[in-house]
Image 1 (cartoon, rainbow, N blue to C red):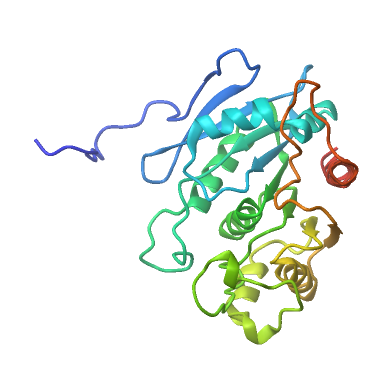
Image 2: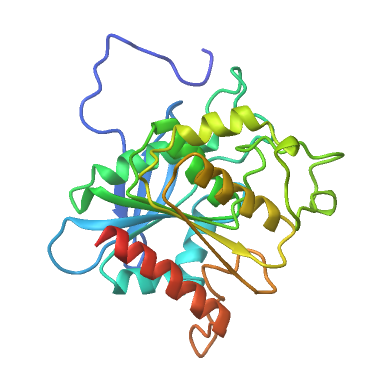
Amino acid sequence: MRGGYVHHPDWPVRGPLDRVLPFEDTGWDLHLVFTDDGLYAPALARFPDGPGPHPAVICLHPGSGGLGLPFLADHVREQASLLERLLGEGLGVVVAEGRAEQEDAYGRPDAGVLDHDDVVAVFRHVAALPEVDDGRVAFLGVSHGGELQLKATAAMGGGPAALVPAEPAVIELLGLRYPGARVEAELQYNRDVGDDELDLDRALERLRRIPADLPILVVGRDDDHLQGLFRKLAELLERTGHAVEFVTFDHPEHAYQFGPRRTEAGYEPDPVTRATHDAITAFLVRRLR
């Protein structure tokens, strides 16, 4: 017999296909979210004490996906200073990811299911949870996670109550026409990015799928090699009539926004990280609560 999935259209699905169970002794629950092609995307969720439904933030890490539960578990155990801050403000927190990124597949009709499709599935799962107010679910994502939330929101035509793309690597979303290989050494855009360096028509069409009244906070980093692209995203969002804010900070580490790793003394964020946490938290609390 051939292995793999077998489709039986005459067999009805009885009940939800997602699964939720406590995750070890962390206080977080593991959510296994059924995706469009029968795989499961992992997410870890935690909600404030007290009666819900609560506003919630779906957090997308800076990796390119497919790192799975061990990576997410490390994130909530060892790099959770911002997550704990959001929980303390009365916001539910979901840390999630999609499958590994397929570079240059976005927008291809033959691409199949991509990582942002998994993020759409996670959003719909979270919004349907009884603990969650489905009208107050936001995205917060860093680097590739910053791009993912924009792709997912464009695919849905809306849904989130706010977006926070931090250092968003919007190379595919904006159709950046980079020379040479797609490696960091050649992707040096800490300068103004011109319209002619983008697939501008497609970029604008994609951004217009995002509701114009959706509050968006784009977070840059002064010395990042893609800082010009972060600014270009904010410019194009403004050009398409979106409610966008842009802030930038001077920090030596890419994707620092979730905060430093835990030490024996606990979390010790530097002043720039604390200021970044203040800005992100204030924006999300203002928009969700």
